[in-house]
Image (cartoon, rainbow, N blue to C red; front, side, top):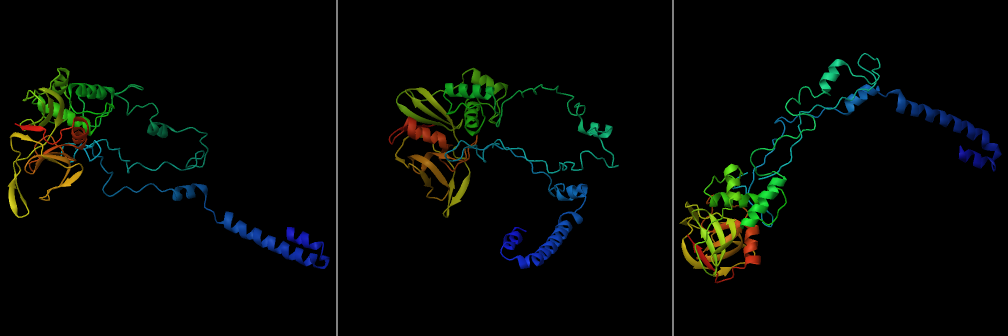
Length: 345
């Protein structure tokens, strides 16, 4: 319409015709808009019901949550898949949860207004009083802690355990109140030192061992020595007879295996040796048996090295596995250069 009025000042003879055309166009446009926006629109209740269908349940049902700890990954303190359980997975959503009711809030099925009130059945379904679900725990009352500490827990008592293990010399670098892979490795080492079940669960016996200050004794009395206890599957960093660090380890499992057309036994030899070769980085086995993180060889092809898999039992082809972070400590903090004595017993 603005174009019509703007042009009428210069062409008065065409004003009437253009107004008629403009009016007819406006009428047609109005009819078109009414047909598209309101005439065929479904009632609000039906539209709401069809526009947001309830989620379909997966044929397999909700995906279960798994929390198996494993040992540490390279550069991170994650537990091993070969060890015991890995750790802290988020709960999956329940696919069977029905979609929320999307009917009009003020009008019931009979067309009458509810005035914001719910009938008796709705009151029972909503369970505002907590009659069905809150029998054992009162409102605002926290559930009791379990009588043990295990992988995945985050609490002050986990922090206390971490600090205690660190003070005793077990390999713990972070006191963060979270029971993760590094803490699990330290608990394994404590349980091995005490001859306890190697399950990573801190029950009464394991807690008592920590409280009593249980630490394995060194077998050497002088110098800087890396001791490897095959029976208890531990690595000890020893200085002049004092154990400065206790590290969970996994050595040869005693089984036979084939590599490059030959048969070998997964055996870790005992005796007195010395570091003679080291690789500062990831090293691939010459027998194609896998990768080793920052290995330090002490006899033949046998080395102490970092691994992503350090379970609580013998599992290697003959080398001595420790966690990647523990191997970093041996390299960067403790030292153990070539020539460092290694005693395996």
